[in-house]
Figure 1 (tube, rainbow, N blue to C red):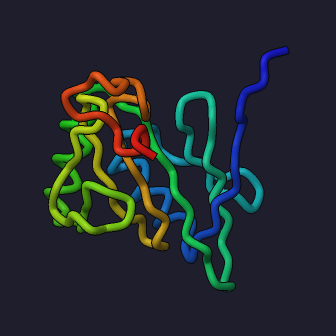
Figure 2: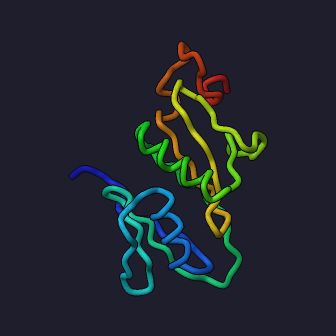
Length: 138
């Protein structure tokens, strides 16, 4: 049997609001409710949102997208005037990155989880890329 990530639980203040945010921004199918979870399908995997009133430790979720999907998602980020960054440390506001000769951008969901869309997997451009991923130099 192949090992595949089926789902992960993501804490949220308001699972419905967070699920709608994710599905609208990313252009995913509408979320569904399954017991205490609001489920966002991302391909074969799901983010199962669970409400909590406890402190939420921000997590990072990266979504590999095609060029057309990047344009559409980034357009929705701009239309909503969402803060966005070229880097995960939020040092480059209002910009995208060109790592691995692709494009990437970071933005937050309503709970402070850092979402990322990227068109090339990390390191896929190698050291010979015009814009190598900065992780290759570490």
